[in-house]
Image (cartoon, rainbow, N blue to C red; front, side, top):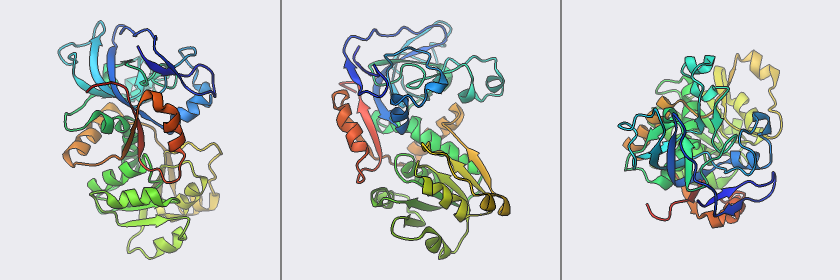
Length: 348
């Protein structure tokens, strides 16, 4: 099969046309990939920043952990009536969970110590076929295209779960800092949840994107042009929680400053530097800081249903595997907004 591979850490992906098609083992699915998303995590993996997770498959390794496609084959022990060949699906990146650790027994599969992570510790979705686990595979309605669905299985799942972790009720307010790949999805989920939404970014392009979405926001703030605190002081409501969906260090300081007393800050970003946590803001305002990553399969299914039912939008920029260098170059352009997707299948 054709696929992109990391052959050496820190070096460009290599397009290989003769990768063996994997065979599903007991309890696995084989997925024929239609489209797969490119995430910031891909950069971290390529640079070896995730080596501490103990790579299971030796290099070369296939990147991407935002897969969509069709069930191509089922392994021994998999319910073939539930998972029919040809079924449209998307996959969360964790697979091969042990089922016996504390996290698995609690139903928290994404934290299984023994799980493989597609595109991180094992082969991912930038190839024509990929292995997956039924437990983390989600049926995909025909109303969502593969190109639009791919970003939902990391960016969408992560920001949706981050909003759930805020534990807010309709009418309360959330600030989403970083309105790019995750944030432009998060502002839509938050509005459907009945929340007041403040979008904050240092770039105008993501804010312009958010302003075009079908669910109007309550406030957009360009932090490079307007002091965030000054803008927030004019709002007729307090910010009950903040979701930080960027690696930009100033956003973490803003989040702690703008969240009301007893509020919650949820961290989704992966900055290279340590995140500064001013003790005064934290203890004198009784703030709670939570980390969040991906989602449970159940929450992911709810997110997919919400996306379809409310006709939500994802801004995608679609490339071929041969165009991966251009994709990576475009990712870093300041005028870019939305999500990058690689179309793997020649025909849908």
